[in-house]
Image (cartoon, rainbow, N blue to C red):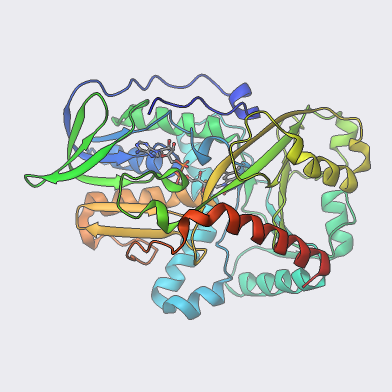
Length: 428
Ligand SMILES: Cc1cc2nc3c(=O)[nH]c(=O)nc-3n(C[C@H](O)[C@H](O)[C@H](O)COP(=O)(O)OP(=O)(O)OC[C@H]3O[C@@H](n4cnc5c(N)ncnc54)[C@H](O)[C@@H]3O)c2cc1C
């Protein structure tokens, strides 16, 4: 299958040039081969190369082509579940480690960006999780209490404080976590790729792995031009998983999320929207997320068609109308870009880590929270690949479980969207 170009996103239109990552055109042997150059693969490659391990990344398209180069740019702390639910489910040991990793991931990411000097408009102005009705206000209150009990520096905002933080009276409450923030995701992905190369990793674009097999004690990965022979492998293809690994694609739902972006807003209008420039996601059955970027463009994201958008943005008009209902001053503003991409949703809404053998690892499923999480987990995956079984990872290791009726996922997602919208409207 030939490489697919990047979508015509705001990020593709404004990114720094990509580092040179020639396609694999000759056979080679390495210690670790990684399939997929998103944040997870690039972070793992960087941290492996920094410990002197010979690592190569094979990417079907180009670094950052997947969810990593086209997401909302929100660097958000946490997982879908509150800390107490994680402790109840995984116990004090693993539960505490999962909490530490997931809520600490934004600090880890911003520290990494500073250490590597990546130019990607990174700002740590906080994440707002905003309630849209009485029910979600209760959920936000519970999350705030549990995060505070864990010593996290969060603050629960009432309706008045939320209105002055957002510039709209839409929300009854919000949870502010100052450790969140935003960045230009494609520049971050390209910066990570360049840093991994500087540390000694090799990265090959236009190099889809079409076949992987065990042969004479090694892993052999074949592209259409050459093969890589490796002691260990890491597969991090996330929602873009193909049939490379048996049943992997069927273990996740590759949900499309869409984003629309405005032209840069005039300073007085921009000052009325998220004046302190946190990012925001709504707490509800259907998530809307937004931020103002460094150039004061508004980026609004949410559910849209479950297929490639391909320049046809009419289905996203609802997001534009919603933005105008929050801030009527936006009427008449030009919306310049619309695009979408796929993120991996797992049945239990948790990231999945598989270790089909001692020298093979698979990671997927940030469930829409992968900017910080995939970066942080990338380092842990590198530790495990470098240090063997003894190096701990803050996630449970599970088997790959294909979903029944997986082929019907677009119908299921569509039905869930309609049902979710109805529940959000009714506040149930
Ligand atoms: C529209 C959208 C908005 C989002 N917004 C946010 C947000 O604001 N904040 C947040 O935290 N998260 C967000 N996410 C989720 C986040 O982007 C992802 O969780 C994260 O980028 C996943 O990184 P990854 O490395 O696991 O996978 P990806 O970045 O998807 O990378 C997988 C790579 O594998 C490659 N690949 C697949 N098969 C092969 C093969 N056989 N051989 C070689 N290469 C292969 C693909 O080409 C792709 O580049 C969003 C996602 C989308 C789509």
